[in-house]
Length: 187
Image 1 (tube, helix red, strand yellow):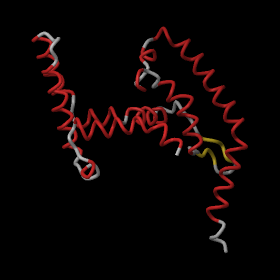
Image 2 (cartoon, one colour):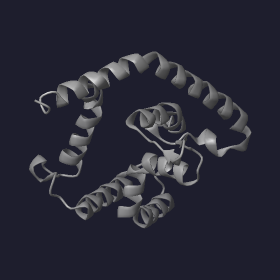
Image 3 (cartoon, helix red, strand yellow):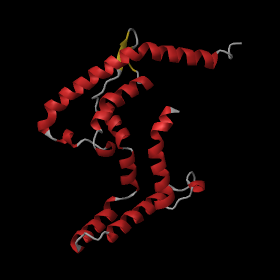
Image 4 (cartoon, helix red, strand yellow):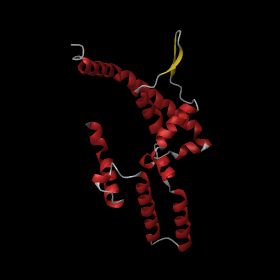
């Protein structure tokens, strides 16, 4: 319930975007084809570029051609999935290693929901700390590396500290919810 309350402004903005700008009513939202949404977004973007009054004709022509070239279904999907794709790349490039050695079984990867929360708090929220949750451009500059490493170290320490403080409550919650969920199954 608390998550819903925190996300309500973004959900309302998304509703307004689909309903008013893309002209997709609530009854069609679950059945509309992705290609239809993409075509509406492209039309909306092209319409806004041509109605801007402060653009010179050559700039308008350049932006108009680029919008048609760059904005397609794959580009929109990659923008929507940017955080998830970045997280996947961290695992594929073996930057994040969540494996633990288990005797007689070797290394086993364990990526629980709690681990995902910790990675989101410590790493992903740091990397995507730009305006409106966009990629932080400081990561692209070599000169910022030492500062970013120091800040990441502090974030990891704080995340670990908070995790240790919250662990008894988290374990109690998981045990209680498991007990209440499966108590009547055994009877």
